[in-house]
Every structure is written in structure tokens, then in C-alpha cells.
Image 1 (spheres, helix red, strand yellow):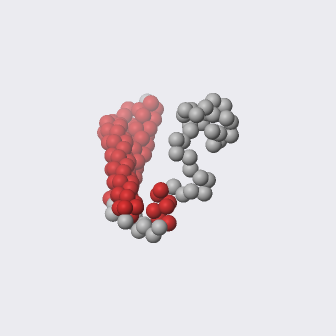
Image 2: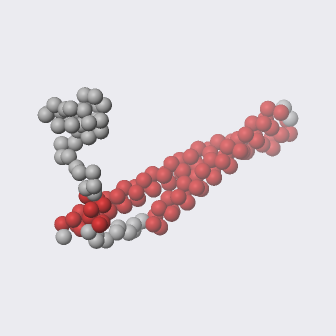
Image 3: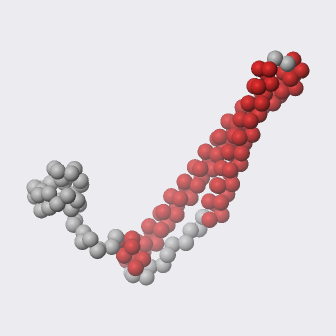
Length: 141
């Protein structure tokens, strides 16, 4: 048997090539043989349409609002720190509320952005499962 990558001679029970280290597929596939996923689509299987378009857009919006809060909180923290370091007493009193609020706003924004990404990952997983089931049903027919 020959390695499909480097064409080196292999032992009969080899799982990896000794020359290139490539994994040996136990079921050799012809170069022109399509994958099962493409094969089901080529046979006229219906294309999967996502049912989560609105949810995915909402997750993007939540993430955007989170990153916007991170930006606003970070700018507020930088402005308040720069005024506090300038040494002006009046500036300390005026920017004290900004310095107290800006860091929690940035942290909440970061958590909100992460939550939006998590929601989007759940929708992607659900779409993948739905597409896999649709292809499996099409393959049985």
C-alpha cells in the first residue's frame, strides 16, 4: 500500500506514514469521489435555510452595544485619569463621578459583548445540527 500524500511504501497495518507522518484513511477514496455532504446536495437534496436569522442579527446587535460600552467606558476612564493626574483640584471634583462610573461601564460592556458572541455561537451550532439532520434525511430517501 502507498501513502496518499507522499506515495511512500507503507506496512499493511499502518495508520500513519513513516515518511511524512500523514494519517492513513482506512477507507481509500478516489480523487474524484465527492464527500457525502456534497453528494447529497448533488442528488437534489434541498438546501438548508436557517431559522435563526433574526436571532443571529440580535446577537450581533448585543455584541455591538457591548463593544460600544467598552469604548465609552475606556474613554471615560482615560479622560478622568488624565484630569486627576493633572493636579487641578477643581478637575478632581468634576471628574470624580466619571472615574467611578467609567470602569464598571467598560466591564459591563465587555460582558455584554461576550454574551452576544455566546448567543451567536449557540445559533451557529443549532444551524449546523439542522443542516446535518436535513442532509441525513435527504440521504435516506
